[in-house]
Length: 533
Image (cartoon, rainbow, N blue to C red):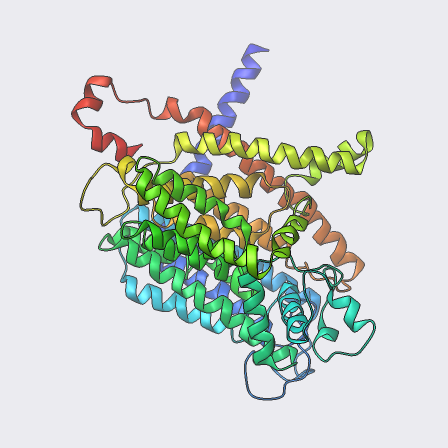
């Protein structure tokens, strides 16, 4: 027995060595091949959308002018689900592998022209927003909530279905399940953007969706620009900032191809980061504005407060600045919006880690109790994972601080690292998680040193994106449904569980892989020790 166990262990070790040799071979750090795959990923998405309405591309109703989104006349190309779905899956895998190859190339010394890289990402992002949205009908609900406001109705109290089931409306009739009977869960500023898009669209779903796509595209590009500017003259960090924002194929797919409002939410928080070394009060104003779009941006507010924790005056300025827009929005403008946000809790999404626990637990204690337990378990796991990540994520000074080279004393560096830790731990432990939420973690990672979390985010985002290619509530064939059920409930949920396991493994082995410096050496090189973690 000992001999057979030893042989098995040796075989596993040898096999693992072969895998490591393969993934660290020169091909995996080829930036040209990586960029080609990223571009191919975006072009596949654009091509599928340009073919017009299908099982994955949304139906936007009649076109009344020449505004985007543009697509071929209906019936010109009839994409079968057996063409559209595998094509998008292929594009997503190409994009994820290409992003990983570019990431490895940066770590091994690749220093591209960052201006051209940013323009490439911007071009792909713009083109993605000039064709119809794909796979998610959320943008149709944004348009519907805006339409309700244009009609003088309150989207927090009235659902789109209540209107179109009682009377005809040229816009609401194009909404899709499953959220037609759900009131808005978005903050007052998000509702204002939806009203503006619906007003500009003038009752036409096609034109309203175009404006909502612009409200996703412009903040997305602005986020990338601000992060690149925060990287200043650090070439490597600027490249990471571009790759993780405007040239990130997973985010182009998740945020822009689906026209989600995640970028509109996050842009205020990122502008707040820009002001952290300039004015705590202005930084507070912007994080407060972010909170009026989605309350999930509270993690960035906590990170900013943690960054200023050693200076009570700056912390007070931050708090006062954040309180002003929050008080106006939720206290005076739309107090019901704060209660509405509570409706977005208690959900469990297919493809997260939770379904694997929910099914057996429901047999034992019932569905309601199982959901309650899973919700609390998610928060407990978030605290544990956040603590683990705080031990292993490397420290790296965000460029541009003239006062101190110690990253642990710089409020912006502390905020960026803490935001990455809090958002990542929330994303990987939340029972309800979707790929476009990942933008909140990708952005601060762009200003940090390379780590395993970069790869875990690629892995996680890839599988969540693949799982929701068939996310629309439309009729797919029984065979396609069976395949996508396996992908979503099997492979994707398993991938999310694996992320949790790998985070624990990373924390567990960190001290053994990188023992702490001796105390006498830490006293001699405190800055170097801090920068290397």
